[in-house]
Length: 338
Image (cartoon, rainbow, N blue to C red; front, side, top):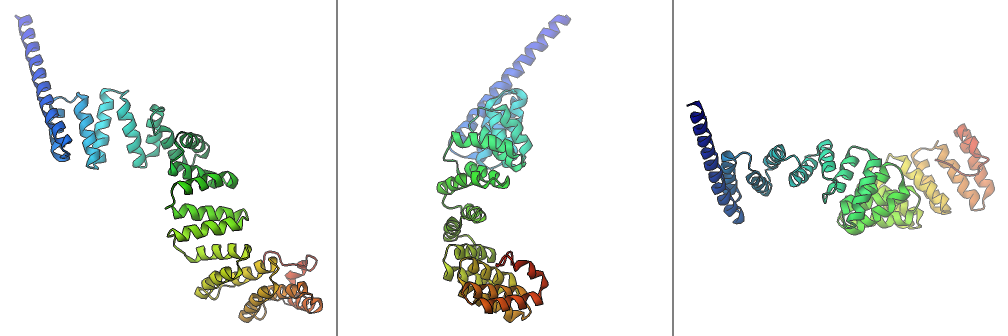
């Protein structure tokens, strides 16, 4: 009798399981029809019913996750893909999608974890490189970003991030070619252009600095005071004196108490052998402060370079009497770090 009851129970369970599977398939088909018609919410509701009847069926979960992504309900998609992995831990599609989702959530530890489970997935190298960069693990970032760029040479973001990694490591020469490539791939990225200009400025390649500062401005980069200062100084170094002076004086007029700008202009023009122009800014400094020994010494050096050695020497001597710390410059015959 007991065996008969057990057998009957098994038959009932099997019957219920078969009915649930049939019901799940019916709702799955309805959901697929709605998905094909791009009625995402209706499709989602059918997939939910299909999952309720057969929670271990993978296809309804896959389809509902896809619809969730279409509706931008990423939490729902992530939950569905996680359920798929509980049923099938090696499910490649779920691992790939979770890699992308965790990266979009800026959960870089999880993105790295899942990307390593799917090393041969299309975006794995890219996501590993970008994630390691965000985690400031630069050697690992370089390793994977280099692989990603080699695989897809048109990936502007990966190329830029590789450039930025080298920049953050202060390896400017290695950063430059990747910056140039990134800018060529996406001409709308004015920030990238400006950063490249700054790199060129820092390695004293002022001509290229001017080129990329100008490109950044032409593409909408905000021309703040800092921007104008950098472009202005680079312009002076390249011999575009009128342009440089105009930019820098525009900044100075906004903060007229700033003596550093005038002093820097005077020094650069002196280095460029533009002694008359340098004298103009020395004069401006002394108008602001008659006891500005540095400005007076700079002016004296300009006169000596112009051939008026006695006049220049007298001015330098007077400057040293005002500021004895300048005496160390007497033997150098030039201003350093004004």
